[in-house]
Length: 271
Length: 204
Image 1 (tube, rainbow over the protein chains, first blue to last red):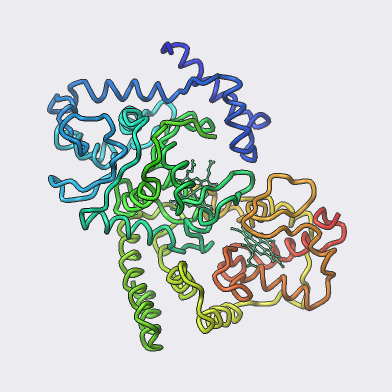
Image 2: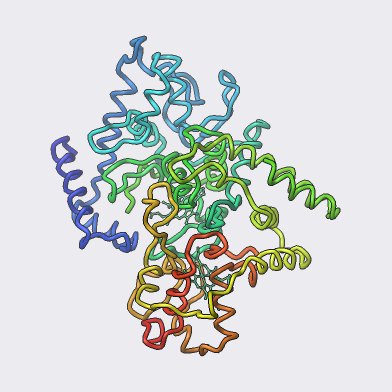
């Protein structure tokens, strides 16, 4: 789709959702998405982020003026096809299990010389304040479309990350006693009209995991898995989840493992 | 994690099975990782990651049925927190109660802490016949008062459920609104009226 057309789409989308009569928080996910497709067809504004991300990946940038083509996402330096579908994974060079987002931060800091603080300040975009990490994530996730989720737990640290994620999923805390499991532990339940996937089972985990990151119509932004997890923790009344933290990576590992075998379709369009 | 260790010591002292001990070790590891993985934001401070005894026990038994002794212990501890309303007046204003049931904000770091929290009952329950955007995590409360009447026993039970859901149902998915200070006594009375007042849309 052409750039100009696409920009119009995005501003239209923002206009529509900011009109409370058209799309209230109560509108069901299904209705909102149907409404969206009726307006815009199958075009996905995530393509704007993907395009920006492709440039960020290919251009020499940062204090060291190098491209990210030496960044190893697990399948070898610069290999992006299908790499996201196998993340999180253990990396020998960092001696850590990393998800795509924490791996990107590592590459941008070590290869390009960016200050981590600067990258994290714009980890989530907000209108004119654009996020490089969201754009790069969109581009790299799209390069896994059609690939099956295939995370492995063979390294003990990968198994430990999974176990931690599982523990976090059931951890009840905060003034409301919520855990992830409160809202995502049973199939066919809803909060208001939003259908809640059961994330501990193959079907629910696959439908959720393979469709994230996603373009969020209600925000006019592309959102990543780190954002999704942090926002559910906000609803859980817990403090701010740290980007790239062991709980963020552990939960991602837990969800990805439960979704293993599902075919990646992200970036999708969401409410 | 001083709080947690106290519960774990209590558990160990009561000498439960080896399975429980392993689960507790795992829970300690998760708790430590949680504390490394968050930063305080506005009113959502890090102490929200500390579990009380009920939360720790309910987390440990997520996968296995609650043993009756543990269930009784949770019920008793939570029952002891319930404060009946002043002068035995259970019912407030159903219209204000409806507002509270509809309001989902409160205690998130994105919420204005100077505004009263909502009860967000509609997130999980069907209540009036008019509001169709209701969730299904909890049972339908349609015609609640009409079906049950408003005898003292019934009012006391409902008050107890709202004040501290875990007194009657250990490890309930429903928040403990009174005990955890989410809703004030007056707000709880207003929500009670929403459930029981014959003029309330819940009972139409």
